[in-house]
Image 1 (cartoon, one colour):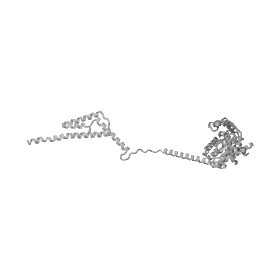
Image 2 (tube, helix red, strand yellow; image 1 turned 180 degrees about the vertical axis):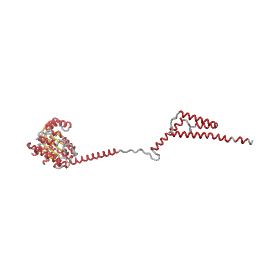
Image 3 (tube, helix red, strand yellow; image 1 turned 90 degrees about the horizontal axis):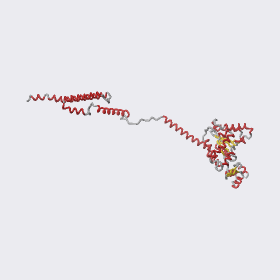
Image 4 (cartoon, one colour; image 1 turned 30 degrees about the vertical axis):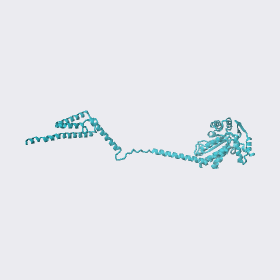
Length: 426
């Protein structure tokens, strides 16, 4: 019995070792093969699709491996079968392997992009916007324009204060009777022109109306005011019957008038002032003088001749203004813009037919004065002469004048022209 026991135990140990080593060697070989296939796939950039021949080959290799394992150790076949069925460790099935590969590629790509755009060790900021230099230039230009506008507004105020046009307006409304619309239009033109020293043409204003309605009186008030705010050398009052009474002396008058205007505008330009020329009784000027005067009204001249104000006072169109006023008594003439436009439409052709220089003039019609306006003129004249303003004397003097009677109103035929002579008889 002792001899039989060693005989039976000797072949048992190698058999057990072979039973344990055979599956291990199979597992090692399969593991090496899987690692080799993974490396080859990564080396070939992991193709997403595999050919049917390659799939069939791998399936055949799997079956051969299973058969060999069963031959070595049938008891381990169930273990190996379960191991092969579990695709968690290794498998040759492309339907299971391909999504994992794609997922791996997406993760890898996303990780790379994240590292490139926003490194983990740095803070994440949005890309900085580059500021355009054109925007700065635009802002600078807007600032310059705003500064120029403010400077221009200040200059406008300075010019208007220099000529004291507010004081002039108060004086005209206080001392001129029955011509409110005409006074407002005069002040509007003066304010627009005197607001700046740069012009493209001179300002030409024409006072037209019948005698005695206040045209010359307004001219005298303008001359008095501008002499007080400027030097006397920049205001010229030219009376035709005084400066050029004889028609034979027309060439001399022409030369004298042209020389006076040229000299005055030259001196005024040096001191940056605008001269004022008041020409009364223009209807008595000869055509030669009118032609000479018209040349100074043209826009194509040097700067000094563009900065000037001309006041033309005449009775031209006075009869037409009188007829229009008497025919439109009920419509409150000269207080309706439409009526004023109709009146200008009537007298404009008459003035341009008299001489073309009125084409470049702003025409201001002076209407008829009512009896109440004449009474105010008498009162003002009596106070100026130092007389006691007796109401009975005032009404007596007013009744001595001639009037147009229409529509329940009385309009003085000669206006306030004879008031001074009547007051002197007291």
